Image (cartoon, rainbow, N blue to C red; front, side, top):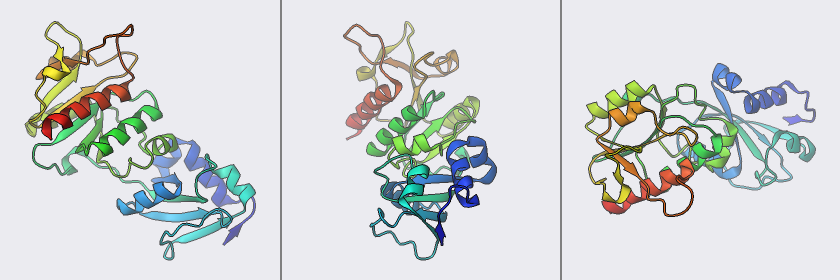
Length: 257
């Protein structure tokens, strides 16, 4: 089917899903832009509802024959796509929401916990690191987090689909970590804080990180097995949370290799 007008109900709903978290949650749908991102979503088991394709741009071999497809002009596609390099395709998918009890862990897992997320770009960057390091689970202690925000999908370059991700209240997360005998290693400054490089990550471990503005709350410091810091040898005293996560995660991976 060909769509020519931005006033078409399908296009208007697509824009709602892109722009409004409450619409995504209400409809149980979200938008995926880009060839690689759509491929990763389908390969990871997400179910497409329909696709919007600009035939002048799209020339990739994605198997779309059994899905609804709407074809749009380059001018209209320019209005609904955030990026010029999107590859001429947007898909609408059903959301998948996991709970902690549904998570399947391998032996000796590595888990990352973010107490909260200030910016979608930071969450996306952490997701890329988790994918690269084959982290077993990313948990965000914020039940309002929107994993399917278009900025998260873009900044994660599709790794939102390749990671196990869950949002939950921090007490629930703590109970789950203890139940699964996962040691809790928090980035927090106290007298007993030790260097990241003096910490043993070889056992089942959860790395806990806070926001850039406020760091971790005392809740995690009071319930941790170890408190750690990344040595800072320059003028500033902290890293961006996504950079801090990458440093900690790859130190754990190095020790386990």
